[in-house]
Length: 241
Image (cartoon, rainbow, N blue to C red; front, side, top):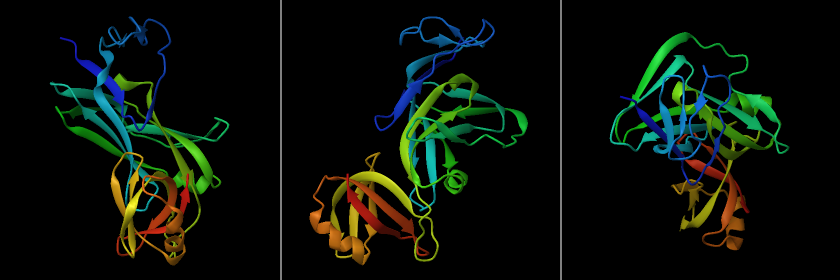
């Protein structure tokens, strides 16, 4: 019996479905609608809806994201990989030109790997942008991440990210992201929600505290922060978007 897979990005991400192409030995288009899907050489069909895709910024102050696939069906889903590589990503500049690809120049061990995502369970991998941050100039880029599982070829999640070489007081990496201002917790801390709607607490610096008078509840903001040695997230800048 065929296994059925569906793919759905979260509302916080843009999903790019790249049409399959090639000969009859490659992916074969058997419909092209949500009802028929696309059939690959193994006979599996990919529909919209069974796998929820998400890309979440980690809160550890590093340039890392968690790429998640959640099984929303009533059956286990098996994903297969032809090497030890589980994901790839590219960064595009504001002109849409690819300026960095994770897999370029990397070697991955050859192996047949199978991952099973049980019902309502989430399969997650960490996407590390550290090399890209060091290689690229400061600026805003479009991050596109995808699983290299044979069953999910061509399905990508996209997120705008800002890379900066700025550092904290002790050389910590400073991260810039977008979100929403929730309110001030106390004289020394505030709460934002990130693009995924997750609440996050930040410690204030004197420079940022003076600026808070002009920030209103539910304002869209761009904020920069780093993690200190005590694990606290320290704000270095807030801009009303």
